[in-house]
Image (cartoon, rainbow, N blue to C red; front, side):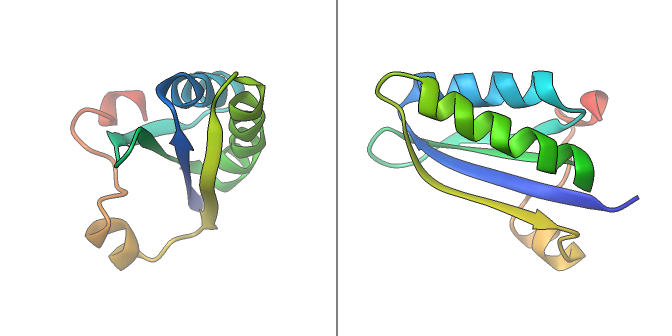
Amino acid sequence: MSEAVGMMQILGFPGTLAAADAMLKAARIVLVEFDKGESQTFYIVIRGPNSEVQRAMPVGLQAVEDTFGAVLLNHILIPNPADNTVDILKLGFSEASLPFR
């Protein structure tokens, strides 16, 4: 089964929380990375089967749009990322995320 990676960069924590929550409820995905960037920006990285990540991303984008004050800065969906991409950019499953896989 092929897997995909989805990433969003969001201005403001409430929109980040709303997007993560909506995506996890909408599809069988794993939140593999969440971190704070610069100037009140946050990013979320999700992984899962291609079809599930493709289902989750629009839901997350809509959640950001529906959250007052949140601004979507960037987003990307990469179907079947190369192993090197996953390893070098730390997009793989961590010890913390493995139980939710």
